[in-house]
Image 1 (cartoon, rainbow over the protein chains, first blue to last red):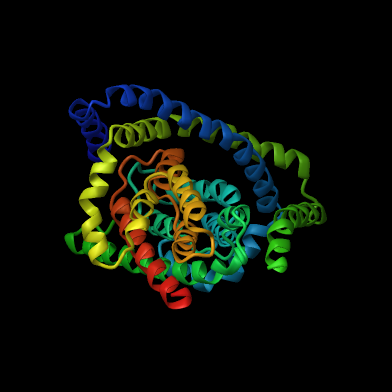
Image 2: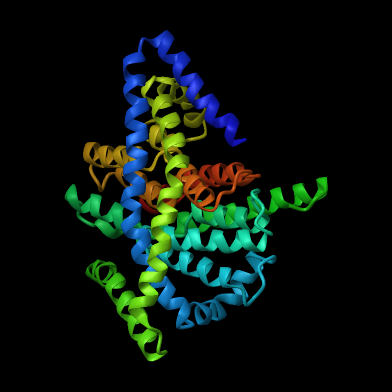
Length: 198
Length: 176
C-alpha cells in the first residue's frame, strides 16, 4: 500500500511536470523535500532527547505505572491485546494526555515509545499489529483540548476571541476520534473474517 | 480565555517539575536516568530520516508539479456538492498530507477572511481537530521499523474525512 502511494505520488508528479512544463519546480522540489525532511528530524532530536529523558525518570519512578492504573478501565477496552500491566499502556496514556493538551512536541516521543512496546508485544514483527493501527487511528484524529498553535495564529491576526474555537475543536475531535475507533474496529472485524485476525 | 492561556503557559514547566520531584522522592538517580533515556532520542531521530526524506520528496514533487492542484480541481466539485465551502477545500485535502502546508493555508485563510469570520473559525477548528496522518504514520512506523502498515493508512484517511465533515457541521451549528 505504502509502496504504491509513494511511487504514484512521485511518478504522477514527474509525468505532470512533463506535460505542465514544471520540470524546474520538480527539480527544486526533490532537493527541497529532502532538505526539509532532514531539518525536521534534526529539529526532532532536541525534543526526543528531552522528553524521552524525562519519561525515563517518570518510568523509573513508577509514575507511568500509576498513570496507566488510573485510566486502565477505559484504555483497556480500546487495546484488548495489550496486557494490563504492560509498559505500553503507560506510554499510550501519556501520549493521549500530551495530545489532549496540544503538546505535540511531547506527544511524539511518547507515541514512538508506545509503538516500540507494541512492536515487542507483536513478537517484533515488521507488520503493523491490531493495537498499532488502533493507536495510530486515535493519534491522527487526536482529541484536542487546547489547540495551542491555532490559538497563537488567531491572536496574531487580531481575533476578538482567539480561544472561541476551543469548544468546536473539542467537539469535532471527539466525534472524529469516536469515528476513527469505529472505522478501526470495522476494518479489524473485516480482517478477522478473512482469517488471520491481524 | 486568560485561564486557558495561563494553563498552556504553565502546563509543561509544571509537568517537568512534578516528574523531577516525584522521581527524587522515589529515590531515582534523576540526572543519570534522564541522560540514559535521552540517548535513545538521538538514535530514533536519525532512524526516521530515510522514511521522512522519501515521503517528503514524493509529497513535494507531487505538489510542485501542479498535480496536487489538478487533483484538487478534480475533487472540488464533489466536496462542494456535499456542502464543503469552496474556500476550505484546499485545506481539507492538504491537512492529512502535509502539516506545514496545512498550517500555511490556515494562516492564509485566517489572514484573508479574518479570524472571527465563518471561514476563519472553520479553518481554525479543522486545523486543530485533526493531525497530519501521513506524517504520523511515517514517523511512528518509521521509528520502530514497521514495513507493512496494514489498514492503518485507510483508517487514518477515513478518520480525517470524518473530522473534516464534523468540523463543518459543528462550526455551522455553533457559529453559523
